[in-house]
Amino acid sequence: MARTIRVLIVDDSAISRRMIRKGLGNDAQIEIIGTAGDPYEARDLIVHLRPDVVTLDIDMPRMDGVSFLKRLMPRFPLPVVMVSGMDGPKLAEALAAGAVDVVFKPGHQKGSVESMLSNLRKKIKQAVNADVSHWKQHSAPIKPLGHPMSVIALGASTGGTDALEEVLQGLPLGCPGVVIVQHMPKSFTGAFARRLNECAALYVQEAEDLQTLQRGMALVAPGGIHMTLEAYRTGYRIRLHEGAPVSGHRPSVDVLMSSVARTAGNHAIGALLTGMGRDGAQGLLEMRRAGGRTLAQDEASSIVYGMPRAAWESGAAERRVPLSQVAPALVHLLEDATPRVAQGA
Image (tube, one colour):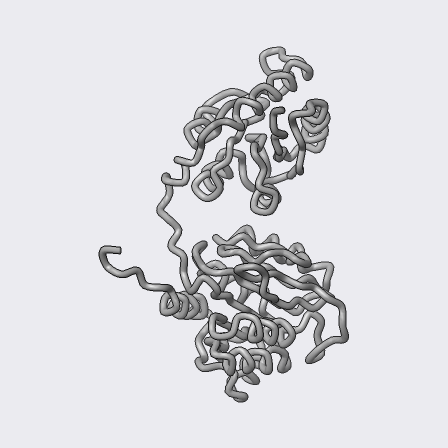
């Protein structure tokens, strides 16, 4: 019996997504595991759902399908079938960037909906057998930074949205998983994570309970709920839980960093950024006492020098650095922790 092909549909048109989903869903060999309205949503779904085949529109807002394909294939090579309403240089560019095949939407070359869907089903069944692994060689290899059990914890409050954006922009894709608490109402954290995702090399999203923390990923604590880190298999995963505010906040940086200290010990790196109050100082101190490396943003670059001051004055932070140097300092600490490969090995 032929295996089921798990397909992700990416198209900014809700009508097209419904049409394709309905047409593919009629085939018992094909399972639709998700749909995405833009490449940023698609990237998150690809990381977590690992589809067998992706159908990808070309014309989309924020990032067109070809640009997305060029970013996708070196990192997550997947069989991709372009679904386009137009012909032209973009299609040739898509094929050159790694797309397996192309299917035209109804209206192009006088094709009907039925014939287009029939053709798409056929192309998907062919595409799933395509070997696209060689596309990973088209980019420079991603250098893993840090120990295999390394983790970075960041905390911020007032002024932290811009500060975190600058820090994450400076972290390479090879860095270990990052966990973040930014004091923010729960209605804003999802949008904030998406904003960070657009500007960072890392994959950034709002954290989900029981989600595995992976290298090259940054997870933002949802507003109104505490986030902790726990050991899971050979790495870590996220736990979200209710509870009273700690240090005046939920989520609390102290709660997150205390859990990182317990779980990751001397493999943890923490940084406390701009913010009012003391949240995070105790958690960062626990990280340092557990053998982790710790930083605090300096006064001159902080919008509010409250949380970093508390961390420095309590001995939680081993160094104070300006915001522009937080990411380079984190990378330097990771490089110190990266296992060295013996010459000739």
